[in-house]
Image 1 (cartoon, rainbow, N blue to C red):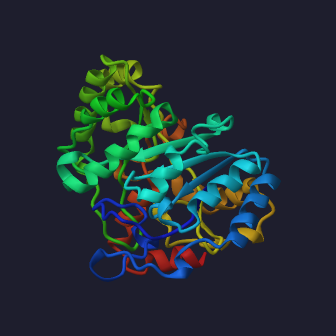
Image 2 (image 1 turned 30 degrees about the horizontal axis):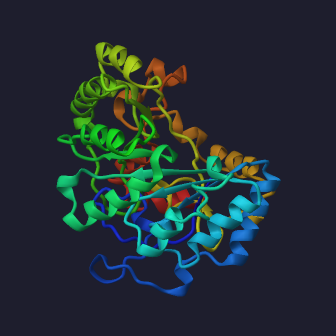
Length: 340
């Protein structure tokens, strides 16, 4: 489970999978309102829920989580409660957050340092401003092997080779967490169209081979269908990653008001209250039941009758991809689905 401690963000990525839940205000400018941040009361309720679920990790997301005015306190409390804390961040940290992680009392410099980690979601430097690149650099400089890079693929001309230089320059973990941007139900965003997946797969396989020569491996997040790679490409990917995995399952994101949803691409559907469930396993079971019949269709026409999908060797890609396609022929599709 992921906890969205604020829906405010200081970046405006065209592929953003959290777009439906973000509070951008006018023209993409964050609107800093008090109710956009998790309260300390709700945070403690969430930690209690994790303990009841026998979970040992707190995953903090946004928006950009470091924009929460009590961000450092939330991290400290999570650590004090005995959890590992993982922070998903774009690295555009303000001075206060930077000093928190640089200081002698920082969790990176104390005996609990092994329980703090980061996933830096990075965009290609050419698609960012000089200021954004500079802010990311100064954040990456202090995290070292506490951090790994994440990269979201949303164009067929992507280039993730720049991450090799960043990983080596700042001594980060030699892994890249790769995500495939997917459509968001009820909200427009940029993503690779189904007909372009094979081209993206060929490009990805080639770049992973180049990174492997630098001892850097890729890991797969949700949304990758098996068929976007040829057999030869799958063979090379086996050697340049931790192994190909086609995943599509409830991630479960929890908002500041303790509303939960199955994942960000499906964040407009089946929103429930976290406190109506006894544990994370019960909540996950709820979403698996909701989507089990839909998953058998996969995300594209070729999934129907596919032996790899039937044998659970492939998840069929992101479920949201298929749902968005079906909704094109029925404008009330999502309303009907959410009502059942």
